[in-house]
Image 1 (cartoon, helix red, strand yellow):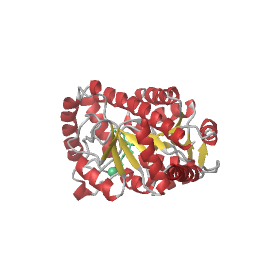
Image 2: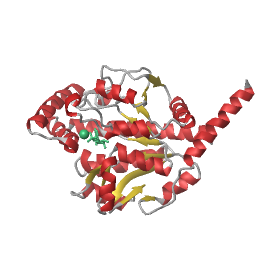
Image 3: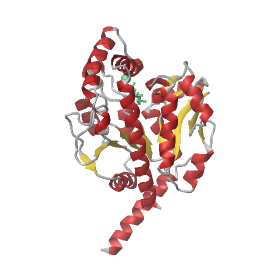
Image 4: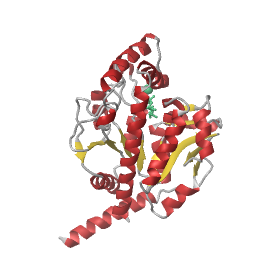
Length: 331
Ligand code: PSU
Ligand code: MN
């Protein structure tokens, strides 16, 4: 029995070690910040963070303040933050304070998803990376844990419009664990979960139940396939995915803390109004999510933004604890 256990621990370590072996050297297109490459070289925990939330998800100066607070939370938990963004045609894994300032204030920065990467790079442009593009960069760098607020999904009426976020297909093809507060109810949550299942994505709620959270609310009426109760359990789930060599990701859904979920009902009503307005105004494609987020913030007089910030802080804390637990398990 003990030999078996030792053998499986060895396989686990080898799987994750070979994963971390994908760590890329600085090349022309991907540049890893020295603090991040040093942490990776020393097999210390690193947490990847996205930047569309900075360029398109929140207004200035809340976006910049939140980005810096989130990095500080990651550091306080003992991990190294690696915010991903595109600066003048180069994907940066780990941004300097000046680069964060630049992305937060630059009005012309683009929203960069998988499909946009080739164009943005070829033109030397700058932008915030979505969940899908951030997963690609994190994978290249060898960072298995990535924290965000909410992921994209199947939009309402998506069965007709086929407006399905590239985040979902990315989760199906890139072995990264994404820690998020679930999926916003601006989306069709049921179809989003179905699509994730088809893509082979292991979805687990972080907490005592399988209730799948709806971003501003701890419950969506849907459930995850599984739940994990603590950082160690979450880390084991991630380690198994990596060791199995499944090239698909894990979605860890962290419910918003109860005290910040209070405005949930008011936000829900604002979402209904914003979705109706978006379709009446003919907003489509990549503009839909930013349009609705801004509208909901206006309609709730900033309450949705406050809840958004609170849940991102919480995700950063839990995601960092998971990254630390994973690092302990494989070292
Ligand atoms: N949901 C939010 N805030 C955000 C996003 C989603 O609450 O900022 C961003 C994320 O970067 C996500 C992207 O990856 O929007 C999804 O966009 P789309 O629906 O166009 O795929
Ligand atoms: Mn879309």
